[in-house]
Image 1 (cartoon, rainbow, N blue to C red):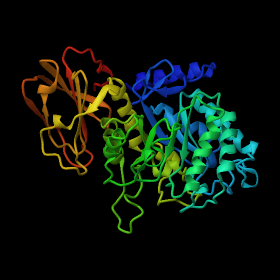
Image 2: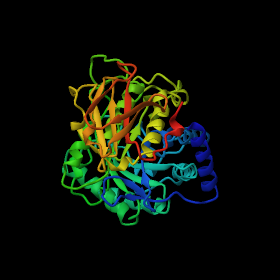
Image 3: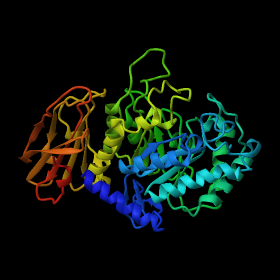
Image 4: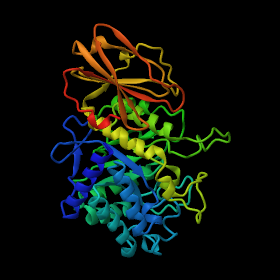
Length: 458
């Protein structure tokens, strides 16, 4: 499978290097997930690189993008006016983004690097989820700021960005930036920025990155510019990522739902509390990812505490960053998200619907909470056990008389055949290990369906 992935990456690079742009993204017909211009399903697998533009030079940007492309990511989330004193601390070339911190006056020397990132990402087959600004420039709350936006200059700033990037197909606009909307001015600023972008760019999708524990639709549920709902489930082992998706699905309007910021790998668990809960790891990343996707999300964005801030030993660490970003690129969670994308893309994942009645075991909503989804045709069931607890599945809900069962190992992207089973009753499936880090994905497929799992076998 890895060899196939590398060959596909090389082919894509060759195509894009010859000038063929990535297709624009749009909403699916049922507005539940994303598709390309030619209606091919798009599985959003993002990576978090908030300080990419602000801290790295072109050589470092190239290394980062190549690594993420090789691991199967197809989108990078980053921000123009960065969180870590992004207005007054220059980028790697000594440039600040704005003249006199005025959103209506872009510093061309700084934006040359933004241009480079968008173009280079496209050549590597990567979309860019681009935040015009971090939220502290709108609602400081914490962080550095300063607050520089008004409804008037936010609209003008949006216009300037839209004119500059409207012809780059590999772009998604993400407004907000980890802040709540706490007064009418905050709402006006975001809506004005969206209006400014939309006045020149009606092609690119747009979303909103909210503060932790919130969804975009908690603030902008009726706004027409909001194409996708995005939530931040946050950096806690107790976060129930699936609940955000279910809540979004219950809202009045159907939109694709993206987990835009979940538990970061290599970050202190619940770092904002005085008590020390240990560190979040690759198992946390996997649980958040599979919970999101099985509950009906259209995509998931991975994050690493060292990578989002591009930490190295010459910089002060934020949130106890402890591993240089170039080494942290190889932490296991990132590759494992690529495995997750591969297995879902081998299946009709966009047809899956959560069905917890498939699970007949006791299933308390803690870190071990199991999820199960099936297709409308009932020819495929996926069930996820976060800590290796046995899964007893009601097979009578399958459409065929015989199904084939497989375990998918989220740690190495490989599958193990369990056997064929009659669907006249229930069946208990027990993984070969149990405890934290022993998560497994169970696949139950119609025996007569021609799913090709050859690339996932040992």
